Amino acid sequence: MMANWGYQDGSGKYFITIDTDKCDGCGACVEACPQGVLEVGEDPADPLRDEPVAFAGEEQRKKLKFACSPCKTYLTSVDGAESSMPTPELLAEERQKLPCVAVCDKAAITHSW
Image 1 (cartoon, rainbow, N blue to C red):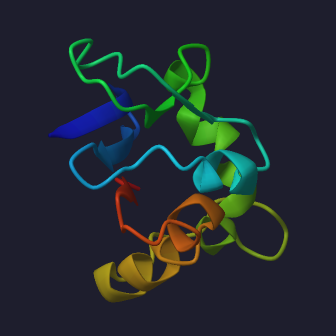
Image 2 (image 1 turned 180 degrees about the vertical axis):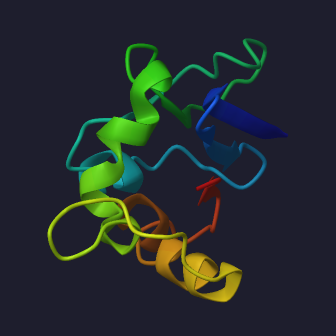
């Protein structure tokens, strides 16, 4: 199951998606995230699931755009101002370098922005 954690507002869609069929709850993403966005525990989207799974913490879900921004240097220019959106190809390539994504050997984590 694809579990989407985040929000959408007038500026865009900000979701971390975790494929719970792939996630084994190892916690590598939790350790890799410098902002403490991710947690591992009982699946909030599927309480009948026996195995632990990664998810975005409840307090972090409504501020993912800002919590994850230190890792998304490809979205800012040298002076720190937002730059124009990179090409879809570059964006997909850069998303693979995000700490939580890069450390997941199951490829269970993606970001929507």
